Length: 166
Image 1 (spheres, rainbow, N blue to C red):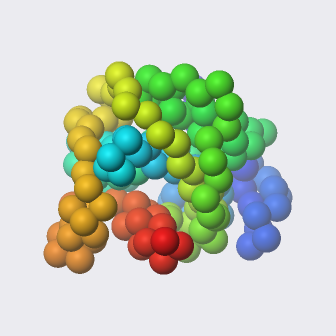
Image 2 (cartoon, rainbow, N blue to C red):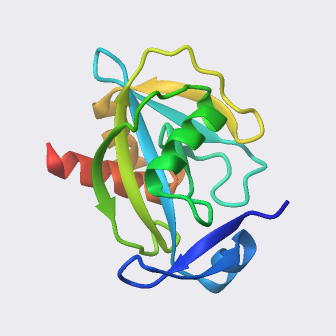
């Protein structure tokens, strides 16, 4: 079954619906959510996108990231995606950190970024994720500066905005 997303205007108000293919092909504004999972020592869990992904395969990305389905809210999306991608069940919506307006780096997605703390265990979805790993803040910042092609553009933007908040 083809994924369907809400199409939104510049104010993030729903104005229609379109398929995954249509929103990316036509550059339509739509929605996504990212979750950053931290452990007790402050490291962040990153996922490496599988080579089968249509957008930015083989690149490191947020712990969890995904499109908001048509009719779904950001909070519902991130809880669903956390279970689908890394197998963590959340009893409550994780902490909302900030929202990023749709732009080229996010693939024209309005993006809410969330944070939670967990030591796992994690069960990565092998269709979507080739590996997961813990990274220190300094290691991620180093990748952003020296090897941005190893990261999804949206995650690089998420990380930069997170650092500005600290």
